Image 1 (tube, helix red, strand yellow):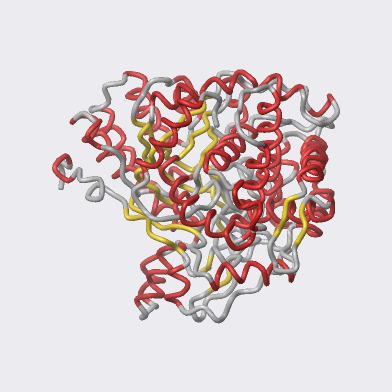
Image 2 (tube, helix red, strand yellow):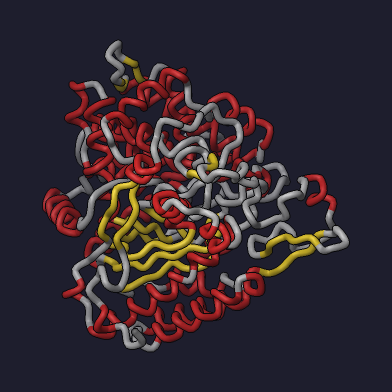
Length: 564
């Protein structure tokens, strides 16, 4: 589907051979949403809840790796494993104390999957007896802190993404930098990165690991982000640190610790890189007034394909990401662009085990032939590219769109990236840069909405997809048949795609918090009829997402663990 047929055959062959596990997916980035109509399913047993996640074995072809690379990967995995306890502290608090109160082994397992006693597939509803609602600010803020109290506090770094807020015995609030609050995990993680650097043959990657090791200890991540963007030919990669801010449902300020260890497909990544050159033209052609597209997207951005071999921390919660767009630092984005990482082994597993079974139940039979993996791949890939389009700074002096839209930013940004991703596919298809039938892309896009909705309204993608579903419904972009299947009305979907793109770009550019709040309240919810239709997917035992069989042993690298 990426223009040349021979490349598509190679692309698909690589992905099919890379897939080692079972199923499923999330979408990258989550945030809770308090305006939800979804109710927990009390009929599910704890085993049923666990079965919502299908286990996937995370592996890659280790025969292609040198001994030094294998030793490097061992240390990288050890480094990202420290992101688990750090994230536990951020999202809940003392894991051991919680586990000691639970006697049932299945409940303990589900707590482990969720990084706490709140069900991430049920809008963070508690599932452990005696546990109340999840605090909006997780464990980043005092649980009794009000928004008014926070906004009144004269603390220069209170809104920093790298501080937590605590209360003194006297009652006043104070801040603690991340590198101090979580130093018991960050120091050994930093040491593992330095050990990994000794086995890095790529000079720039070695320097990146050294910079990232330092950043974990002082919260100054920009130098390592800059270095990460300058690397072009490293075979091994790692994402580690406090990155996404979806766990902070109070303000969306605080970032959660996470990590991924990745193996890059060098040849495939080189093929994909050519799409970056079209970003300025695509930005210019966005369906919105010129004042909302004056910023110039960086063309030094990378578009790469990877096998991911380890997930940790925030990245390992709820629905698992199949694509990543980093760094999040707007200063780095404006100067260097971003890197889009397509996690092809996980993507393929989710397509096979989740999207296809969903489509076979919920999409009209005559349109199921349009559910294609290459369309799924392209839609997902251009979702990540679309994060670089639009506007970062508001046009009316409200500062960054991220700041102006507060806790709603992630849902609107994900919604923008989803719909602009489809818009980009259409534009590139018209230019002859993408082959295939646009019906494949649109039908697969529609099926993907149902997949993401199942993550619940507490997920940024769940909110974004509900907004899109309800918007498409109002615009006649699809029809619900009497048998409960859905048929895409392609012409009306095209019009809805353009108008929704313009709406979301304008809301971001205006920093319109009230407008976004209204949109989410009205359209970011699951209608009763859709709930009934989605129940058919549960009755068919289609997994909602995946968990992983992963680690040094899973990769068969025990002999390269020098410290075991």
